[in-house]
Length: 111
Image (cartoon, rainbow, N blue to C red; front, side, top):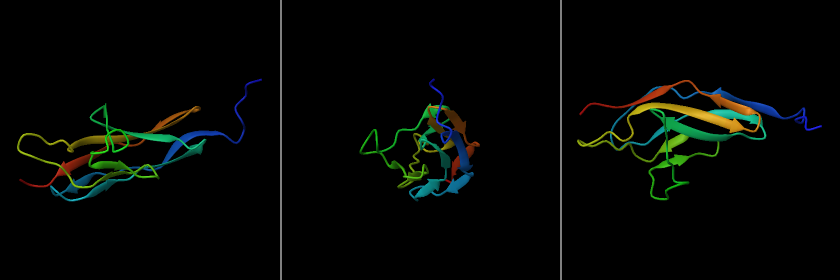
């Protein structure tokens, strides 16, 4: 029988990200913490698109912290675009399923 181990549990989000208002060029952290067994893999999405971190692109200014939070070295924001502004959601997955956090909007303060 291929029953899952009783100890294994589907992911659940135990710390949700909250809305952020940050100044351009400042660091910021969107919190996310997920529990589950096996430990869930966390991914972030912004406006429905997967967020690339320095795991995919070593030059990225965004880092996925060990606990699952998303850290911005500095918020990028230019006249031509607002690459960091948007609505973020954190998704935790393991073989038993996935859990999605609440939406958190990141806004860049005044220009």
